Length: 473
Ligand code: GAP
Image (tube, rainbow, N blue to C red; front, side, top):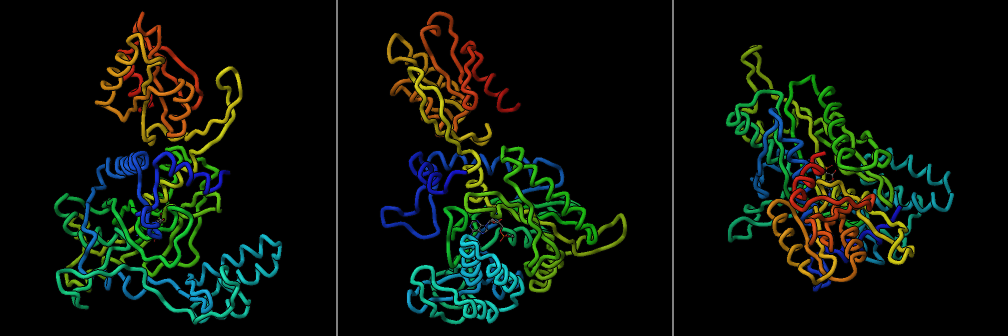
């Protein structure tokens, strides 16, 4: 498995991801997507959107990021969307208490102190409040990883929502929050959508959009950031049918990742032991990163918690009236909540590979290749003239311009053709088209496949059809 440093280095060098505001030293927990990154991101979102909304019973919305502050009272985020925070008095470093303990357990396990690690893990599993976290840290003499000091403050709750003010007056009454999940935009619009789209239970609402969390510790590249994007779907169902729909959506969502090239062995389903305030059961879909398995998507059975709560806080009915069976009820919800940016990282890590191949003069050379699924690859094809003379650039440029009408394509004339292949391999481009001496005679070109590196020859008039067929195979 390749280290995160290797992936981050390629991501920066090839323009997938840059540190946010890098020229000012960066802004912790925020990242910018470069020219290749933005294409990958768009492709992931497009594949998700097609998968989720190209069916009869799911429709989309795009709700505002800023919502009425009562939303967050009703959803429970104002009171409960907190992490336990602890500060080291010597280093002034701030940690999430649970992360501090987990990292300590990991270090013990690495040192083969498994009995001690097991004891602390059991303590962690039975934590009920902040005092319990504090007791574990003090009793086990957990040191600050930075300063080794064991001088800790008490554990306090830290609300993860970013606050700002609406309008010109910075008064408490004008406080609004950057949404910490896109889900609430779908719950508050439940009635609007059901009525306008003439939907009946069961049906779903899908949304892709930014979410913000003032995480205490950001870590592992795009894994835990303060600004990120989610792709979420709320499926409204009849109470009592939640187990069956939960199993259905869990299966659908796992298959989506596998269909888009994530290796089966790198996916794990983890059932939640500790449930969020809104859920009666939940599972995470995890991907194996170099630092271990980490959640990329959660499937949550949210009961009627959200709709009931919004009904109570807004005074507006959130019921479904079933005229066929002559009954009315507040629907239950099964949610699929994926991180676009976490999936981006999973797809990137999954695609990365280094191998030795035969290069120029039959010499072995290293090739770095991103084996993205064809539909996710940022650039679909690249076009090269073999040499920059004899009319080849003109022909190649025309083919490039024709292809550009339908797919993302690059034109490259610089360096030996082998080098140009390597550049495209590193970007994950599935097809490289070369215009050579034979093209001038019979209008045929070579198409080289990124993964097998095999080349076929076809007539230049067939390139667009060939690629379209390949993308849909
Ligand atoms: N609506 C439910 C919800 O938001 P969550 O488990 O808190 O549930 C869902 O988040 C997904 O959002 C996660 O599986 C992850 O992919 C992504 N996510 C959550 N926090 C994140 C963060 N700080 N940075 C990047 N992605 C995050």
